[in-house]
Length: 263
Length: 263
Image (cartoon, rainbow over the protein chains, first blue to last red):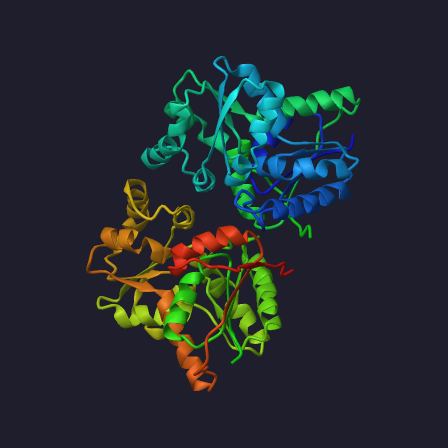
């Protein structure tokens, strides 16, 4: 019955929550979005690690049985360094996304797009190499995608030309599979698909991480099989802004988002 | 001989430092950029106030004689609430920019562009009304300008079409004067001028605030008239990123940027 804890630098992690609710409808969820310090993608490894530890300690106060890191920057920068400090199981979005991409590719050419932090960490490349060393990875940072999504610019001429500009090296590399390595990017899916062409498979880490959470909880006998699920949302700033953006990420508006200070 | 303290949410305040150095070449300067929590423009008033107090306390540890808030969001959201708490004189960028705009306008129609926080605060409108209640102000938030500048996208087709989109209501309002109400925006000056037309006067708050600092220091007998000025730069994250961007804002690269934790 104990809740699953989910955290993100801000609102993007709601794409993961949406999948968790869909795939694990009985689970209680506590979400924390660090909206006072968002974004993480432009910040240093050391700082992202410090913020992440504070977020984990906040979720532990809510007696979570499991923590899901719904942020690619944290998953790639901080998670390898800190997950072993804690007794609670913690999963990130990199491994599930990498596994799915290796499974999906036919020509063994995979693209990854993400924040500067995620791309600089080379986390997806390293993970993909574990699954299949023959896969060639082309990774590109797309720093303007997050501002576009947060402004609600999800299509149109300007967005399309920026998407085309960023994705050019991926088209040239001939990737047949593309990992959307940032929780904001699924909202740009239709433009990205249009630019890359119909034959390229887009991998949405949010979906894959929910599959992984389901498997682990099931294996550990931690699945919550009955009862009405309770979902709680905490942020470190701007609960109204978060509630409004929630509609875009979660597909429905949120009420009772609580502002807390986690440091 | 005591230094002038300058703080900003990140790197944008260097446009103010550039002007201070130009207009006050003998003054020692201590700069703090809160790069661990940047940007402020999307955050709540309460949070911006908390961060600002922490930044002021950091500068006071360096025995500053004067504090210059080189951030429009802080100047509009936080400064009116907190400046009277401190004995050190504190100036922001709003009053100098507003005064100059009122002085410059011929048709009494002034435009203001800034972050969401700055525009929502209505600080420029209120200040302009103090100087001349007959001036009509049109204020527009341009949230994509900061990401563009930080990515080094200072011109070209995409940037121009976004600038055109945001500034449309200002053109329709027939403003003859436009306040660049964010320290990042002077870097987009040539595109903004092109879109608005040659006859519109652009007001760069950075320049005006340096004039104001010079006046106040002179009136209070605090001007440093001799010696070789020392300029120190502190950030809460990513000193290398800050050093690299400094070239864009300051016109020259920076060395010895020190990382500190100000909280």
